[in-house]
Amino acid sequence: MAKLSSINKNDRRIRLVNKFYQKRKKLKNIIMNKKISLEERFKAQQKLSKLPRNSAKNRVMNRCQITGRPHGVYRKLRISRIALRQLGLQGKIPGLVKSSW
Image: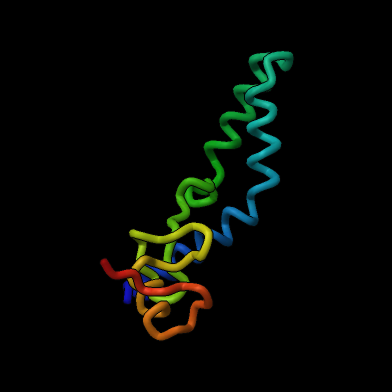
């Protein structure tokens, strides 16, 4: 099990990303639009840099929903490889069979 503080920190980041998503999107559209004057684009860049760092989407870590493990997480299932194996061995995931050769 991962440290509870790191799980909570990641949850805070997710909330910040959701809170500032629309604002960041508008500012980025202004910055990328070449038809707008350079001054306005620069002001938008400054506003974007004043937003919290943790509101950026790439700061969010994919973590296992069961254990909080940060590595080896399947995106589709949102659980780690270890938790997936344990649930599969317990028979809690339909259609998942342990392979042997």
